Image (tube, rainbow, N blue to C red):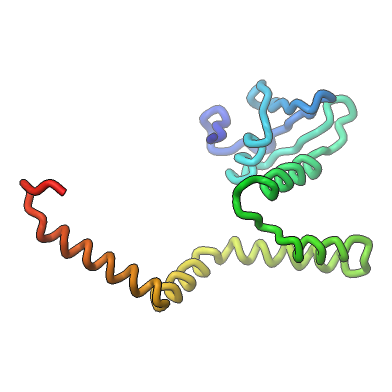
Length: 155
């Protein structure tokens, strides 16, 4: 599901109201939304804030945690291993909690900033692995067969 925001690339800040019945309402679009919509806003790097409809209390964090929880329990590959979760839990209330938070934010920002370089490096490593070499040979063979194929030939 692609998020379209009045056919504009991005709005400055979208306010989403969370009602007591747990429904979410996008005030910029004047319609109800779901967690998938919120996830798409995150992916699109769109700034938003989720507030309680009665108290205006910020509920953004709890909704984001709910999205992570659903992603972690879906059939997709989990990002947070049990070991990582256990280690994170140990930091709650710990004197180093603030340092870990800063470290994780900076590390993730650096990873995102350099992910293209990391992928290029990783693909270079994979090309030199046995599987990478095998894939290269298969690709060359397919190219060779394609060259020999005449226009009248069918598969």
